[in-house]
Length: 138
Image 1 (cartoon, one colour):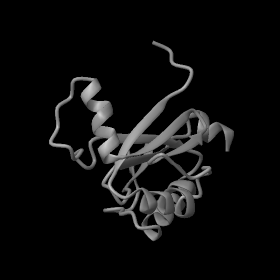
Image 2: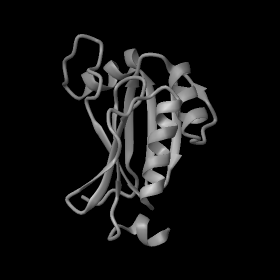
Image 3: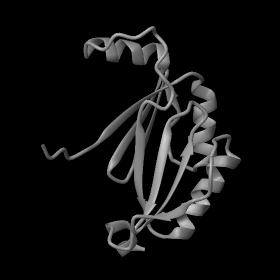
Image 4: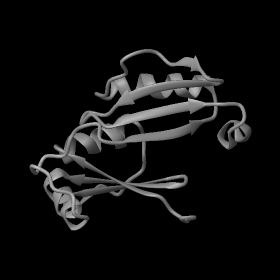
């Protein structure tokens, strides 16, 4: 499988709060909320934030049963970053915007890696590695 676009849909409890976090805090561009959904276009990824009630509709179509409330942190979103400073800056901005970073970024297995969670508990992994395309482009 070689998808041309990756789309990630995340269930959120409060669409307005998520809009403030991603648009205002992390400075991702979006036209705003449309029918309970927010779309962000990032390089190599389309990110959709969907009201948790709408998300249950999608998961039930796939045969996934739930109690109607998706588990926080059910996925990890990994991003290759251009530098250690970019990892640290993004962690700081995420925390300032209402997210949480449980510990500072650190060197691990040849990469500099940091983690943060958004207000709904979705886990993000930020990785700087000199061999990645992001590092080469910086």
